[in-house]
Image (tube, rainbow, N blue to C red; front, side, top):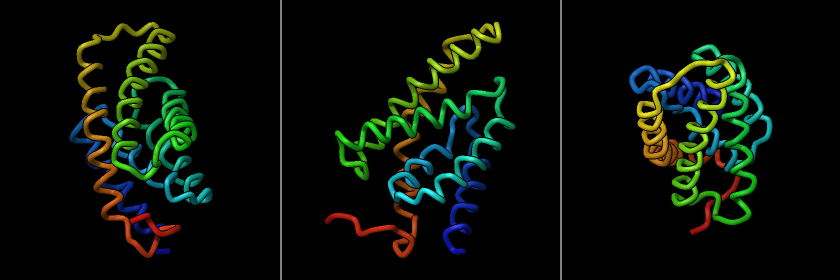
Length: 155
């Protein structure tokens, strides 16, 4: 019950922050944290709820959210074989990958809908996503209660 309350608070904070910094996904760092804690049930619920929220808040047709979070999950699965999945460096690399993924995915979906975009604002949002992702992940990881962790962290 305490875990669900923590994730509810995180979700509300993420949605609130997205209101003040449009175009940046503040829920994605939480998904990385959930993936690191390796709780499949929690991950499934978070992804479903966040997909519904993001698709409702987004401006593109259905598909951006599943591809966005799918890309994050895929990078996590591949990246954890190469890097320490709980390191700040891994969070920075994930932020960089997501920034690039944001540009490619947005341009691809906008092209399918025949929407013409200005690339400069998109690049600015992608840069913000890249820079804010590790900071938000670090804050969430720091504030995530120790008693909810699935295993002990290495020293």
